[in-house]
Amino acid sequence: MRLLVTGGCGFIGTNFIYHMLGTNPDVEIVNVDKLTYAGNKANMIPLEQSEEGKRYAFCRADIADMDAMRAIIAEHKPDAVVNFAAESHVDRSIHDPSPFVTTNVLGVQTLMTAAMDAGIERFVHISTDEVYGTLAPDAPAFTEGHPLEPNSPYSASKASADLFVRSFWKTYGYPAVITRCSNNYGPWQFPEKLIPLMITLAEQDKPLPIYGDGMQVRDWIYVTDHCRGVEMALKAGRPGAVYNFGGNAEKANLDVVRAILSAMGKPDDLISYVKDRPGHDRRYAMDYSLAKDELGFEPLYDFERGLAETLAWYTDHRAWRDSVQSGEYRSFMDDWYGERR
Image (tube, rainbow, N blue to C red; front, side):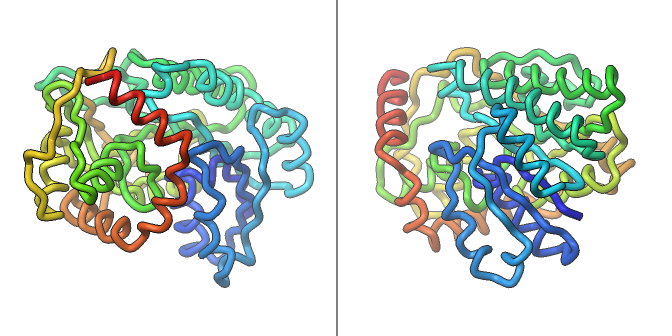
């Protein structure tokens, strides 16, 4: 099987490529990435230097560029497309929604059109639980039938993409599958996201900014479990289906940060409460029973094990963190959190 993986130099895409090549000796992967601030080609250096790297190729391109997508597909003739490419940082979407519409909506439509026209018989689109909106504290977890009620420009762009994917299945019969996942964490995650950001700040004994009261609840899934779910959807998902993936680990943001500080031997007084983010969803929770019944999905990592492995990875990869934290990234984070205080 030859896969076209888009956004493969980002956090989840990187982990998916390592997972697929490491566990499937018959898989070849072509990685297409635009290499924005959060896409790092250096993530693939260990892979390229390994035996598995012989089954890997990289193309720098934008999924919203139809000519580029058609040319790459014609050259590499993939059997399936797995689309991770996305602008994904909620804070950035509030600051400027435009790139999110370009990549997450137009890009998905462009990529799907190129794949369909080329006769690629499998398309897996990676979405998010944020398209469902927010849950009350005692409400049942999201199922695939929950209404789409996005509350940020980021989640609105992802919901729009999901609807385009659905329309291609309903209108053209194109065999696409959508996966929606809860909050990922693990190796290679860009340091603007909660867990790696808190690890980095705690190491430096800097204040850890927590939005509002910190009681926003998320279901946390270790990234390898998510990659396993995507692989299952790729190989056995029903065309036109949506599958939720979760980690059985609902935790308030404040509790996650306290767990990080405890594991690092740092005091809780590093926590600094800042003004809440506009439109901040209160709770996400995922019912993944459909994926369990149809695909055999079940998370293998509990939060404690996943956090321990994540901390160990970031401790061992300080040079990687320093290399990805560009001046543009640092400036945005300083300005944003300064404004939110």
